[in-house]
Length: 273
Image (cartoon, rainbow, N blue to C red; front, side):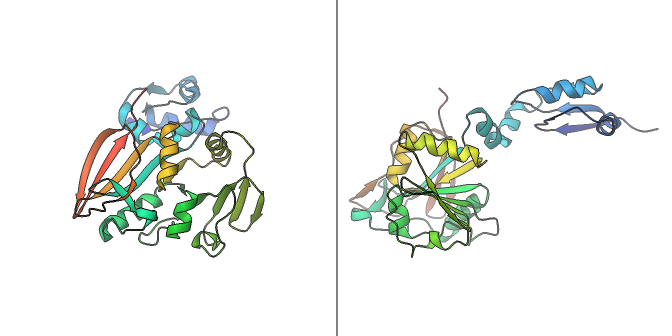
């Protein structure tokens, strides 16, 4: 005799009628424990119409956390946004005249590359791209490189920078031209609210998450516009920069902290309205 089986299916969605074969497969399990459906709820009704017992509300909080990128993308019509920066113990992210310091240690650097591999895209502003010449890849961690998103409104970044090497898909948001060549895309923005226009464009491109790695001006602009969901801040407790660029000002809810030798990593969530 076949035993009754339970299965948990998270975030089911059906775009059309449930086929007989699909219904038969579902009835094989006899009972479907449906963890959570948050977007439109139509999947539940379609399963119930096929005689599948559906239980909702199981592990709802955990389900929301697991699917936070998906839910944010569909509910807010924008990607899930993670702000990330590294700072000294005295609250600086760079020296005077944007003098670059290696703030984080080698182990934390690898963690950051792991974070990059977990998101669809990575974003930096013009000055960060120009002064740091970053690769914005996962070279220190085995994983997929994120799509590179660059702010360069007046197209002043030189083509010699690593972001122009076409090895990774790169989108340059600007006000001057619309052009595409292999992995390099110049996306022209029309006059208006730049951040809103970029969020709309990213939604149309189906980019569901972003890790923003600077600089201070871009990070602060996103914070003031309310365009962020969590922040990950790495503080080197052994480094004191003195005069330099201040960290962005923000109000976040501390979720947890971790220590990695000289660095303390703080995870913040955006306060609920």
